[in-house]
Structure formats: C-alpha cells, structure tokens
Image (tube, rainbow, N blue to C red; front, side, top):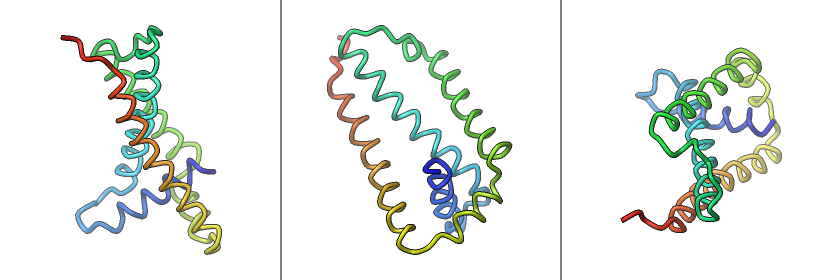
Length: 127
C-alpha cells in the first residue's frame, strides 16, 4: 500500500506541473531513483564494512541494475496494480489518513537522501 501511495503522491506532484506531459513516467522514474538511492546506501555500508558487493563495481553493472529496477517498477505500476486503479483508490482517501500517509512519504524521501549522502561520507576516496 505504501508503494502505491508513493506512486500516487509523486504522480499528483508531476501532474500539477504544467510542462510534465507524462506524470506516470515521472512518478515511476522518481520511485526508481529513490530505490536506487536506498540500494546505494546499502552498497556504501557494505563497502565501508569491507563486504564485497559487485553490482556497483562497474558502470555496466550499475546501468543494468538500474534498468532492472526501472523495469520492475514499470511492470508493477502498469501491469499488476494499474495506474487508473491506484488513482481511483487514493483519490477517495479520507483527510486524516491522507495527512498521515503524506508525513510518512515525506519522512521516507528525506531519510533516503540523508542516509545516502551520509553513507557517501563513510567511503574513503581511492587516491
């Protein structure tokens, strides 16, 4: 449910922008970016603790992994959940529940960025 609500809020944000003609894709790319930041945090921690994680060791692996995450999100949103069903489900949500969900989404997004950038500071530069 949280995943679908995250899509819904990002979709609504993108739809409110005059220049965004494809808010569905903007929301899906945004979710994928957040998931990649979450994985980047895990990868940075693994590197900090000397745990081998080969996915981010080459650009090709990182690109393939990114495309896999994007593909999974596209399949989930379009084929399994359905954009129209998600919009319909959350457009009817009551105000108190909406406020709680919005706070949770904001906390998730802020925490994702903080943890990712903090974990980047743990990594020693290769000189």
